[in-house]
Structures are given as C-alpha cells and as structure tokens.
Image (tube, rainbow, N blue to C red; front, top):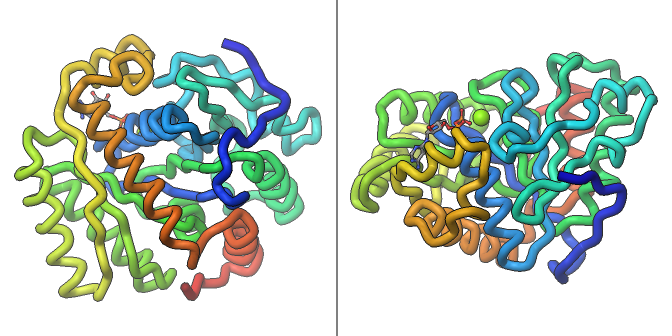
Length: 289
Ligand SMILES: Nc1ncnc2c1ncn2[C@@H]1O[C@H](COP(=O)(O)OP(=O)(O)O)[C@@H](O)[C@H]1O
Ligand SMILES: [Mg+2]
C-alpha cells in the first residue's frame, strides 16, 4: 500500500469526469463490492477511477480493498491536511477517498465546511475519468444528496422481495422529490440471468406503472463463493480473480457504464455535479432535472 499526492488522467474521456452513484435502498445487497469491483474493471479498461466512500456511517470501501486509511475528512475540514494527504492508492490501480469518522452527515456540516469539502473533492475528481460514489443505504438525506447530483444512478438490487420494496421506496423519493426519472439497475447475487431479469422486471413494472420512471437493465452479477472469500480475505475479486463468473458480470456491466457515459452527456460533468450538490446543501433546493 502507498499513498499518492498527485493523480493523472490516464485516458482521453473528452475531459469530462463521469459521476456515477451506486445506491440500494436496503443494506447488505452487495453495493460496496459492486462499486469497488466496477472501479477496478474500469481501471482495467484503461480509465482512471476515483471512489468516494460516502457511506459515512458504515464505511467499508477501504476494508474490502485491504487498505488502511491514513487520515479522515475530519482533519481536512479542520484544515490540518488536504484531501491529497488522505487519498489512498488501492489494488487494481484505483484511488479512493476513504469515509470520514468524525462527521455524521454531509447535510449537518456548516456551510463553510461543505464548501471546503466539495471544492477539495472537485479539485481531485476533475483529474479522473470516473468518480464512483458508494452511497449509504436507506433514504436519508446524504443518499438523496449524492444520487440527485450524479450523472447516472445505479440501483443495486437482489432477487429478494425486501431489496425490491426498499429500492422501490428509494426510487419513489428520488423521483417525486428530486425529479429523477431514469435509473440504471444491476441485479446482484442471483443464480442465472433469467432470475436477474425476473427481479429487474418486477421492479421495473412497478416503477413504470406507479412512478412514471424509466429503469434500464445494465447487467447481473452471479452468486459466487469467490465473492464471499475475497471479502473475507480483503482482496478485490476483479483484481485477483478476473475470470470468475462474478468478475465477468461486473466487467460487462462496467462496459455498459462506459457506453452510457459516451452516449449520454445531458446530465454530466463535474461542474454540474458540484453545482447540484451546493444547491442541494446550501439552499435545500429540489433538483429539477
Ligand atoms: N455476487 C455475490 N455472490 C456471493 N456473495 C455476495 C455477492 N454479493 C454480495 N455478497 C455477500 O453480501 C455481503 C454484503 O456485501 P456488501 O458489498 O458489503 O453489501 P452492501 O454494501 O450493500 O451492504 C458480502 O459480504 C458477501 O458475503
Ligand atoms: Mg456497503
């Protein structure tokens, strides 16, 4: 493990950082494992990737990657160090901003602290092709905050009814209060693609009918004992076992995210992302697009 002070864009993604949030409604569906391994797959496809662990209460991106945070956002906010000082270079060639201990919610920060934090994240993230955000589970304010500012929202679901109902509840709030109308969906921890399609269709039919929201299927990740073993060993699947079925599922999904980024420029870019975050946090405004 080593720390980086500077990061460079490694590919030409037309100079636009694609911001993608991963969200789930319910915890324990494999969101963090999906974020971490998607980041590594994107890096393997030649992109520079930054992961923001925004799950301030249950931070575990660093745990899954087997790296030890050097500092927290708390020190950055106190002005004792810069964000560069706490960036971590992780296995698979990705960079992470580990979650803070010492701050509870972005929303509860003073406005000068929010400005400092967002300015710092923007300065760093601008140098990357992708910023992936691991949002907290649930429907709290930080979940809404990050999802409504991202260019693409990826909802991670499983086939379990609780995952589907909690995702429905999350999508309902994001669509009715924050105006979000398009959601990408990945189905994790299922045996076959047919099972994945059943889960996707169940959610999709409900949100299309009752919420007038569009869901896009972007792939599936098989249940795989290697996933569990990698998490136990704190070694990322996509870096250690890229040819397993689960890693291939993630890699296919990552390729779709690249495709979406290339096709969809409507709601993208770091400037948009940070303008949205500032508006949401400073004025409590509802997003309109
Ligand atoms: N595709 C999968 N195959 C097998 N086990 C999985 C898979 N995805 C997730 N898991 C299990 O689910 C647990 C929770 O994953 P995690 O990424 O921490 O979830 P979340 O971030 O949604 O809380 C993992 O520790 C692992 O045991
Ligand atoms: Mg998690």
